[in-house]
Length: 207
Image 1: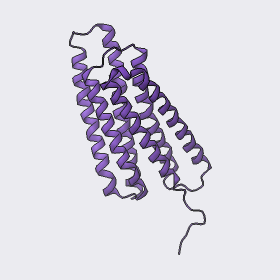
Image 2: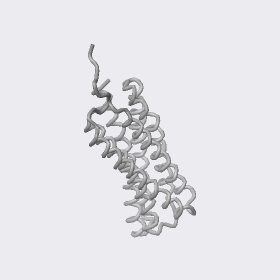
Image 3: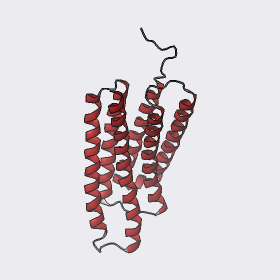
Image 4: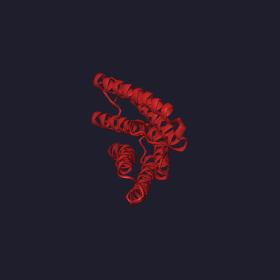
C-alpha cells in the first residue's frame, strides 16, 4: 500500500481562502466608494491598507512555497493563482487611488454598475476557492462559468460607459480621466476571470 513519508501541506488552501476574503472586503469598499463619494478619502486609505495586507499574504505564500517540499497542487499553479489574487486587489486599490489623484468630484453611474459586477465576481470567487480542497469538477465549474458570465456583463457595461463618455457632453480632461478609470475596472473584471480560469485549469488537471 502506497503512502507518503512527508504529507502534503494543505495550508496553502487556507491562504487562498484568506486572499479570497480580502478580495470581498476590497470590493465592498470599492462599491461603497462609488455609491457614497463623500467617503472617498477614508475608503481610499482602507483599500490601501487592504492592498498592503494582501501583498504581505502573497509574500508569505511565496515564501511558504519556496520552503515546502510537497505541495497539494503543482507549484506553478500555486504561484499563478496567488499572483492572480494579488492583481485583482492591486487594480481595485488603483481605482480609488486614481479617484484621489484625478480629483474626481462625481462618479459616473456606469462606474457604480461595474463596481457591483466586480463585487459579485469576488463573492463568487469566495464560494469557489474552498472547492479546491475537494477538487471536484462538478463543484468548481459552475462557479467558474458564473464568474465568466459576470465578466461578459462587465464588458457590455464598459462598452456602454465608453459610448456615454465619448458622446460629446464631457470635456476632454474628464474623458482622459475616466478612460483610464474604466480601463482599470475592466482589468479588474478580467483578473477575476483569470482567477476562475486558473482554478478551472487546476481542476481539469487534478480532478
